[in-house]
Length: 188
Ligand SMILES: *[C@@H]1O[C@H](CO)[C@@H](O)[C@H](O)[C@H]1NC(C)=O
Ligand SMILES: *[C@@H]1O[C@H](CO)[C@@H](O)[C@H](O)[C@H]1NC(C)=O
Ligand SMILES: *[C@@H]1O[C@H](CO)[C@@H](O)[C@H](O)[C@H]1NC(C)=O
Ligand SMILES: *[C@@H]1O[C@H](CO)[C@@H](O)[C@H](O)[C@H]1NC(C)=O
Ligand SMILES: *[C@@H]1O[C@H](CO)[C@@H](O)[C@H](O)[C@H]1NC(C)=O
Image 1 (tube, rainbow, N blue to C red):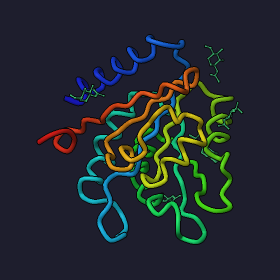
Image 2: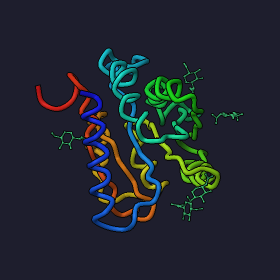
Image 3: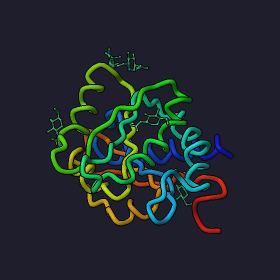
């Protein structure tokens, strides 16, 4: 099941790549998994399942060398889902044995951090980067990495199964696909 899914994903990425500019090494953006209501911390059982089994199954096949997540701002006003984003990222980072870098959010944050961290990593590596970001702060991230690409931020905030795939040679045409996690994504 998982393998079939991965083949579909790779096929999807491959086919979007050859319709336009030559494919550079892509980077990916996902949001935190499902969170409980009323600002309670952590992930819901579904979010945990997504983080612990589905995300590692998908992204282990995509040659990820670095994960970048966010931290809540000093005033505790923005980046409120960053802890959940980190929790979403940790099982994959552990499975791959890679580091998680962070960028701050909110007033006084270095707006260039996501792009700079991405570019600095890519200087010395041919591996891909995965952003795991606060679902309520996607707009800022997407601006920072320069790929607004007509992406619907409300959709990204609403659906934690979405994967944005960005070809750095074609920032205007980000691809969008679902994780299709078994039992939790798509229609019942
Ligand atoms: C997820 O499922 C949808 C609907 O069946 C399909 O269009 C899409 O290609 C699938 N995504 C991946 C990554 O396989
Ligand atoms: C992410 O979660 C791990 C495991 O709980 C923790 O050790 C780490 O400090 C967290 N990182 C951030 C930036 O919150
Ligand atoms: C993780 O970060 C530490 C500290 O910067 C570094 O020494 C280590 O090589 C990094 N590990 C990987 C797998 O990149
Ligand atoms: C990245 O790939 C290019 C082309 O294959 C190669 O020349 C370069 O050494 C690679 N860089 C790293 C850091 O592996
Ligand atoms: C990201 O960094 C690259 C390389 O430094 C730069 O060319 C590009 O303009 C930056 N993008 C944004 C949105 O700042």
